[in-house]
Amino acid sequence: MDHLKYMKLALELAAKGAGSVNPNPMVGAVVVKDDKIIGRGYHRYYGGPHAEVYALEEAGSQTKGATIYVTLEPCSHYGKTPPCAEKIIEMGIKRCVVASLDPNPLVAGKGIQMMLDAGIEVETGILAEEADKLNRIFMKYITSKKPYLFLKCAITLDGKIATETGSSKWITNATSRERVQQLRHNLMGIMIGVNTLIADNPSLTARIEGGIDPYRIVIDPELKTPMDSKFVQATDGKSIIVTSCENSYKTSEYKEMGVRFVELEGKEFKLEDILVELGRLKIDSIMLEGGRYLISKAFKEEAIDGGEIFIAPKILGDSNAISFIDGFNIQNISDGIELKNTKFNTYGDNISVEFYNN
Image (cartoon, rainbow, N blue to C red):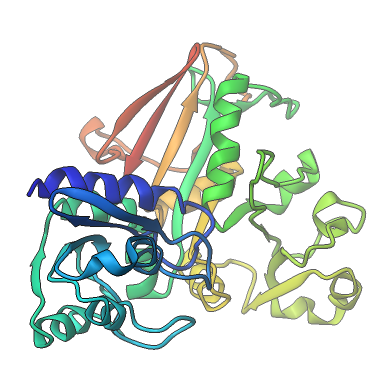
């Protein structure tokens, strides 16, 4: 049987859950018997049936003696749904081929063991690297309880995000911006600094058909966020301000508008502390959209997990224009920040550097 063929299909199915299943993993499953596909499924939405359930139910009575391909180890515990390993056993599956093992302490090999104890043949590691990459966000969040931090910025060829006057719309083309909207759908939150909020008054929504709007997170130590901003006026309960405990006395008006707060000590926040608190809100991933101060801070603290930097064929040539990063004092080229696992994408006359540090 062609394990690679069927696991690739399972991975393609899994990717369909992007943005809809967080903070759960994306998972795909394919049931095969006599070298014919008899069932397919993927995890479609958070709290809904897992991929294995869809695939097994589609296969129905044909599952006895069949093989199931799953991109992530079947769960072995009762959560929002019953254990998938148990259902695989009940349906008479003969063999289970798994890509990635589940690092969730509630599973972590227990699903595999449950199937082995029931006499099911189990093979693991088929396209494991591809499966792990697909679930980078889940892998970090389930083991650290901190969101995956993904940088997005749009720059000119000389590294500027705005002119000296703050003009920044639009650096990149419409195709690049469509990609950004997809990223906003895929990730659970967007983070910006309060100065960016005041300057641009952004909506911070996913403007694509069927897109899920992310949580909007503003870092605002002094609590300067305007009450008439789109951020505050949103009514979906997804606006979060990270501010100082010293501002507790003036949060009530915001809270009446549905704004939520993360309050930290002092006025200089570490991104590590911010991520821990946002992780407690079950936000598994955040797109960092700026501005310059937050982006520079994230690089200095080595908090960025991955990102995509969009580059337009424009040059400002002005030392007073706003660079996307600054504040470093690097004397040797060899000491510069080096992006890892890079991939180059083309969006019309724009390009991007996509990278993953872990």
